[in-house]
Image: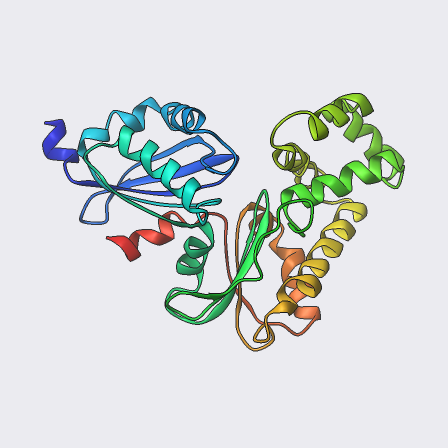
Length: 287
């Protein structure tokens, strides 16, 4: 009974450093299941951790014998060694599936721009962008990590919140709430940033504070500042950015799209599609 219902399934995944979203579909484009597992950035995690992060979702692994194809889009897969590591892990867990691994940037491009040219950006835990010519990524300014880039990302906003807290630039009432919510102590912040792994993810963990206090003028001004910096620093690197639609993928862009759209409109730019997660948008592309 199980085999006749679930045989020849396809898994499509959007994998980041923090979490991975999966959707399982049949050959009639019917969604059979949606799953979440741990992050799968192969430049961040070793093979054992990658395997454990997938194995957190037992329900999904129960379907492994019936998965015939996996299309995984993720961060950190452009490096060949990292790519091979992730491919080996997936092949070991889904031994009957044909594995396809692409960059998260290509997922965002296919999910938002489709087959049309556009400038595509990711705004989640980190941020990145590219010029997509409708078939492939033709240009990207490259990614130099959270220390040098990641403008307007979750970790960028988290860093600004921490700076404003410690420099006492945050409004007094909001500062007290921030301290209460996150039990802020200078020593623990220093330990997380300089002694423990994934400081970018730690910084991004403060970003939900903006959603919880969205009505604050301080938060709205911070969002505007971040999005303006992303446009002037990153998007302006593409000579076509004033002529093509600007598409966005990721939780930061999706949740705070009102402020993002206001910044784009103010600068006379053309807003495109804004989505939170590309997984379901990719079903039509692969099935």
